[in-house]
Structures are given as C-alpha cells and as structure tokens.
Image (cartoon, rainbow, N blue to C red):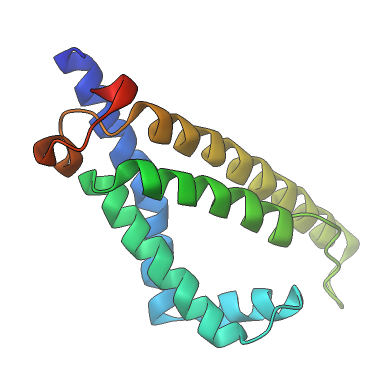
Length: 149
C-alpha cells in the first residue's frame, strides 16, 4: 500500500475515533443524560449501562486512534452504531410542553442521528475489512493480514 494511502487511512482513523473518545469521556464524567435515554428505551440498570457504554466508547475510540486490535474494534463499533441507531434514534419523540415546531425539529434531528449511525457503521466495516494501515500499532506488531497486509 502506498505512503499516501496509509496517510489517508491514518487521517480517517483519527476522524473516526474523535467522536467516540469525546462521547465516551463525556458519559464517564456525566452519565445522567445517557442514563435518561437508556431508561427511556426501557433498558435496566441505566446508570451502570451509561458508565459501561462510556468506557466502551472511550477505549474503542482510543484503540481506533492508535490502530490497536483495529479489525475487532471496528466490527464492534459497526455493530454498536447499528444497535444504538435502531434502539435510540427511531420512532417519534414527543417532549411534553414543547411547542409542536420544537418536537418536529427534535424528530428531524433524531432521523439524522440514525443516518449518521448507519453511515458510521459502513465506515467501520471498511476499516475492519481493509485494516488500520501501516501507521498503527497493529502494523508494528505484524498483526495485519489479508487485504491490508
């Protein structure tokens, strides 16, 4: 693989990791909003799940950033994106005492979040398939196989 392609993969990994590093850190330092969403979805142990999700996002984001166990982590993030998109970003949201226009805006934003999650799943599937490139811990460890070797 060319130096240019490896540099592009590195930039892509940085971009793909940013959201999960920031989101995971946010959930670990203030899990209340996430716990509320988890409760609203009918899942048990909302606060504990919020912390677990925060830890998963932070660790997975850092792993993608440095290219460690990239294929496994990328598949896990692809599944996570689809699951959370379907679990938390489908259906109609109606916030009591909000004006109709505000609820419409929230529903439009929720649809965009679903599309974002599905799109990210595709990006992580590509990363899992083609690997982290030469500028990664995996490459230094000789862990690249298949198409990315």
